[in-house]
Length: 621
Image (cartoon, rainbow, N blue to C red; front, top):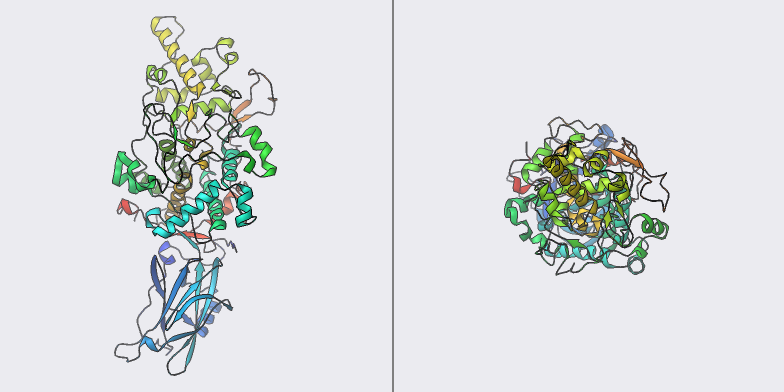
């Protein structure tokens, strides 16, 4: 059962600290003479203790304030051991061994028990959301006391290295089923709710690989959409195994531990997520060993019937594979590379400094931009890679750094109609639009609005003056070379494309963003949560350009171009836009933001903690 309640619907704890159950207070009977007990909840990952209320006291608090604010937190489909202790005054000879659970119910229904001993009981919760436990305690003298305790049942997301070996194996096994079972076999085994990886790749392509604009990135919807996407995937895993939750990878740990040698992290062990290959020429390669060895792209036949034709027509590459349309790779395997156009633009993973800077954002708009870019984007780049580009032409232009921007400029040209990718072949800019139209590289790139980006990265480039001098001709040649390089696009590791969910690494990086937002929203530091996005002039994908292709018919020649304008009309980023992810609840981006508030106990999940262990006190006020 999924339940959603807005954070403003009732009084909620103001800080994440209040989400941990409070330890029982001073021992003994209170001033009113009532007996007091300590109820301890424990599982394999830890324990917490609360002081449950007697029925009368509970109902009195509920009547007076409308809320009983002392919550206990439990996880579904995992044994929670409840232990009861009688709080006694100093010198009292009473002992806890005289207590025993008589009944144990939630909202009047018997709770599944797994083992019952004196003073303790193992309980398995299966329903998410808020609940009220009723415990009838029988003492040795025959007297009974009825206690009530409000509980919240949520899945708990943990860092991969915090999982027990058993739980990590269950998580990875469930992922492997989603990735490898066909839709037909999966539904036969796990029921009609089974969702295979083909759906997730298609869904991301339909948001990020459209020709008009990117509906999932470089805008105010990015964080909400990807958080919802993670939740949809988590629920798909739970169809396979209801015990698992979405684990995450805190890569600041690996930055602090391994630095430039981050591929030595256990994350890339064969039995976890597999290696990022390093080939002599920097070309991408499939995952070489382990559970993900030679992982293949999903089949179009596994896309839902009502989506298949659209995906096949608009969201495949020139070889008919479920890849970004501009990624002209014929390989049927998921590909990775450590090099980006012959370079390593990022020598390390996002650091504690990166996350601290994002946490210090004064507004949601600034925070959104940081989450879109430096806090996670470079992980996509560093594990995907980019090859097949004429790097010698980049060298001539002085483009030795920030070569991750090569692909972003190429995507801009693709959206604006300059780059065309022919069926069964590579991508290029047709001569009709360049030399055939009497335009050199500088003129085309200026017309396409790309010069502002390129002069930031290619330090040897300047504006040709048309004088015909040797220097002028060399400059024009350099611009021609850059245009040729970006128009060819090359081939791209899937993690660095709009088909990135095809790589299992995709799913373990995005929870970091949601988790940091929860921490930020509970801080005493002022935070303007007005909807927005702080566009920047450093990233070539952040163009705010929307292209209307409605006048470009199928089969028309390259001279037929879309109408491209600067606009804020790219859907998927406005607060009132429908959340473009298939969840059971109906959300807009704005109402999903409310759902994610750390004070909303109706959320189906939470995080084990909101700490960045490798960062020391960097993220603690």
